[in-house]
Length: 346
Image (cartoon, rainbow, N blue to C red; front, side):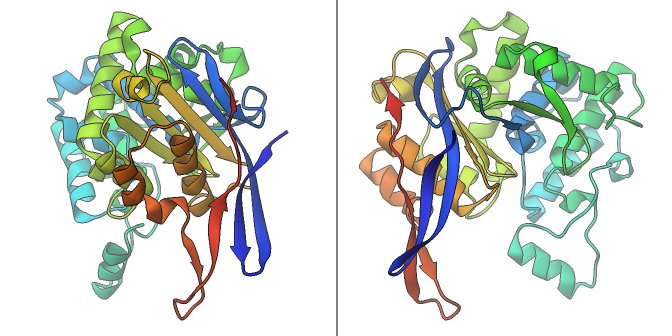
């Protein structure tokens, strides 16, 4: 049963409760600590699965064939805010693969970045595919299809060769057979994977510490990890959780997903410093009610704090996400979001 992870207090009452499940798993698959029942809690991975959807670009040779930079690979893993730098990086991926935005089937929505959304309105323009937070992932999928000699047309479908390669990668990274992975359709139209929170954490432990993987997948995981941690701004954007966490705390890779999913990978060095053993560690959490931003980020920072992963300076720099104030329309603090769980285990 999921446990209460976060409560929202509007003085003097607790107004909202957010239940969820957390898994802390090392690269050998050991469940180190937990909250709730993460081995039984099954949810869709949503955008937290993007690094593993990008790995086949490397393993297939497509990334080298098209001359993709680390920044190109980073935006293929992103849920970006459509700042100009994000749009330009997606165009870089498409252009190097000889493609245009016409191939993208991710749909369009207003930029997640407020400044860019306001600028779009001022210019009298409608959002396009480049503004979709998933456009980098889709550009990478189309580039992979082009490299494999497959038509990008239909790349959304589960039976397309691109999606088959991605699913194979997910099975290896999570140690789950195909029969135990639920397949749905994500908000952007591509297949999305339903799996236990435990399995999400295991995949992130291996992303941060891929030494036990077959050599081709090891190289792919290393390259994706390096791209994300070297270019954190491309993964989300200004003032957004994944970007700020990776900027503040080297040795941590972070990728959130819709419906209250958050996944974090700790390098072996970062994990060892916290006394979590010699291997990389993955942390995955699911907020049961699907609340994306504040409860998810609050719980994620609290888990890192309880694990002893963050220095005092890093904790201070991340305070805006840990215990943010509840404010009224005039900006006055009238309450607080606060984590209330304790991790169990070793």
